[in-house]
Image 1 (cartoon, rainbow, N blue to C red):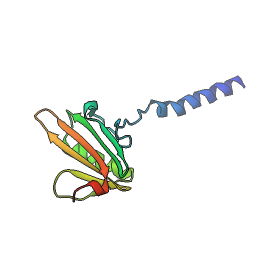
Image 2: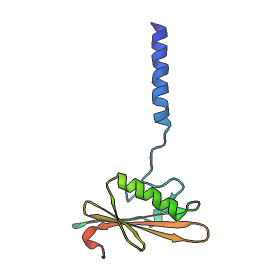
Image 3: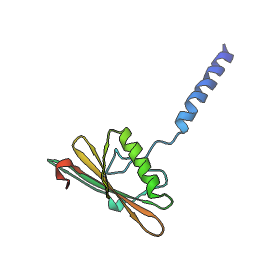
Length: 129
């Protein structure tokens, strides 16, 4: 009986161990439903959050020293679509996504050493065409 109990404990540890070891995705402080891509660092000084009658306005920013704009937008296109956002096809920046009356714009600003990524969330009716 003792041997059976030990085997069950070992199986439980093996089954739970990998799940517990997996890092949980991090999200922006002000955009709590937008994940922070691995390799990006959130810039708290860029955070803005404002709730109004017509909806919320929130802004977040991150620096990406070792990522390309293609990697960043590929990640966010996939991640945001899985979260119910639909991309608005535009032939110019910024990249825009819509969900439940909100618009999320992603701006990429390149420098010699990194990319600054800025996220702006606003009510759909507040956006410009």
